[in-house]
Image (cartoon, rainbow, N blue to C red; front, side, top):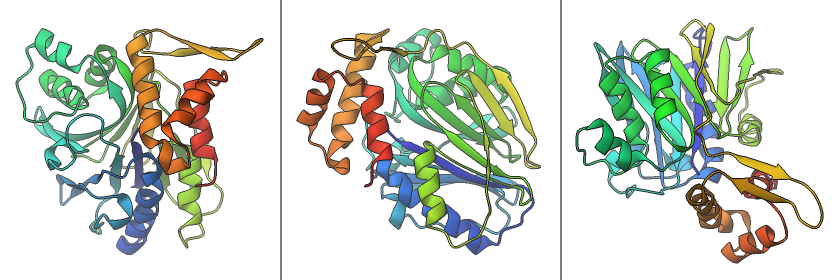
Length: 307
């Protein structure tokens, strides 16, 4: 479990300090889903920049420049590839055609090694499963709805991706992991985080009076692009290959049928690895599963309880 978060200031309404304050609040609250590393990507003077370190969000040194309009962030819970090797951390920077892009991922991919063999992707020192998504886009030679669709339909596991480029476009590729996007039309502001609860907590931690936001709905299987002017364009991809759960409610227990046992086991392992941060022991997860709770219900409980 990791956390995606970010800010789009389409009207350049906010000062440099205000943007850094908002992002600090987002990064700090996003620690609930990962404290091993933090990173951001943004454009500065026409160049796409990535800053990341193996530190939790609340101590990550945010120094977003005045001209950055689209800032894409990530807090990491390590599942594959040591966070101490900073190249394993998100976001990942790569070229695509004549431009460049940065990608961040929330979830776990299970077929990254298989894809590298099948597609004959180049070897890399980066150990993170997420990096295969970068390689697939890079191989396509462009960042576009078409290349993102091809990538999203090739990877298997759990995911939502955010991708930004050197022309201040932000793409959200919504798979089977959560993401909440808020919009303040009068301010030209978008904020997002992996869960609505995290986004609300971050808003409580900033001193700005933003008013009431509009929530922008993004369904599983959608690719949403927000450009530097705040205009939204949408596309779709096939989600039939994703690992999904179907919950059934009935006597005596509630239970969940998964399309793949490996995905289910990985999901449960993720829950156990972060359980103590929410006041649970790993054995409590087994007890809740035995009592009929689905993994999805347990995770929802994590992020709606007081931490």
